[in-house]
Length: 183
Picture 1: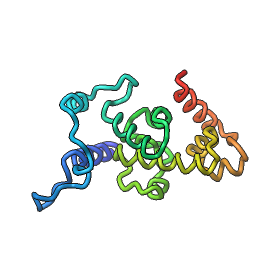
Picture 2: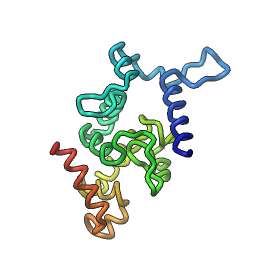
Picture 3: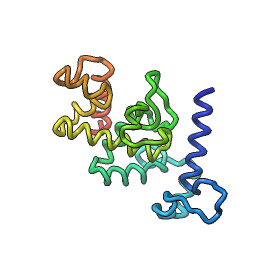
Picture 4: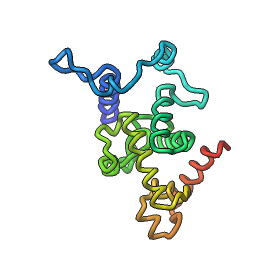
C-alpha cells in the first residue's frame, strides 16, 4: 500500500515538474519551467511512450543524468552505473533499510544534500551525484573507496581503513565497477 501511495506522489511530482505547480494564480510560472528548454516533439514522444535509450534505461532520465553529470564533473556512465546497481532505474524503489529512489538515498543523506522530494528523479539523481562527488573528494578520488562509502557510509570505510569486509558492500563495489567498465 505504501508503495502505491509513493507512486502516486511521484507521478504528481512529475506532472508538477513538467507543467508547474497548480495554484490560485494562473499567471504564476514555476522556476522549473523557466529553466528547462521545451523538449522536442521526438523527445516528448519517446518520453510519453516510455521508450528506452540505447543504454537500456528510460529515455526520460538521459537528459537529467547528462546535465547533472556535467554540473558536478562526474562521468555520466558512473552515474548510470550507480543507478543501475541501486534501483535498476526504478524511481519508486525503497530498500529494506529505507533508502529511496533511483540512487537509493537515505532520508538523512537526502536532506544533507538538499533533496526535498526524494522520489523526484531529478532531485534524487542530483542529490546522489552531489553526495558521490563529496565522497570522491573525501577519499582522494579513490573510486572503489567512494563507492564503498556510498554503500556502507564514510565512517565505516574510514574505520576499516579501506573497503570494509561487508559482503554486500564488496559485491556492490564490484557490481558498480563492472557496469562502469562495461563488462
